[in-house]
Image 1 (cartoon, rainbow, N blue to C red):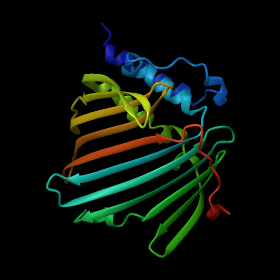
Image 2 (cartoon, rainbow, N blue to C red):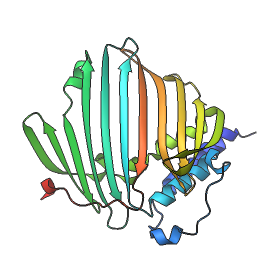
Image 3 (cartoon, rainbow, N blue to C red):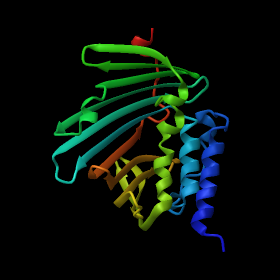
Length: 246
């Protein structure tokens, strides 16, 4: 008998490959779309498809924060990244990231650039790196930048819904908006353990907030990694070229 998890993984993988080829629609075309049900938000393929299709039809802003610390709390690395995306052709996207380090972090993190920004107009991308008093700007290959739509949509992170156990779904209200709150424990792997995933899903068809935490085994020791991703200003984000591109 074919393993059900294998079937689900193959189905979702096919969805991720084909979603990038889908035509971009207008926001008005989604106005009569059916809202997600409580069952929909626990179906990995349905959830990712709805999230992808909704955000490919609307501009949006994403705020992501990742914090890494060792178990003894001797250091903390906090990375904050923001995307502003208009998926209508030609795709326009802008992203910036900055890391702060507290404590005695490994040397390779101390050498990381202080701030990285990237701009995309269609398939043309420009990257700006600020490190201390030095600033470098260059054209870059789209595949090697952070302004790709798939990365902004965080679909790979949502794919972890298929690795869940002990799932609960409840309806909550945040800032006057009704949301589904999905919480699940994640299966351990040979690299990660003690993982949990919480999603706040907007019934209109996209994941409004993602929260994850897990222990990751590195060669230098175990580290606790937490991540929060927020999707805001859906359909209301204005994306303009930053001044440094010119």
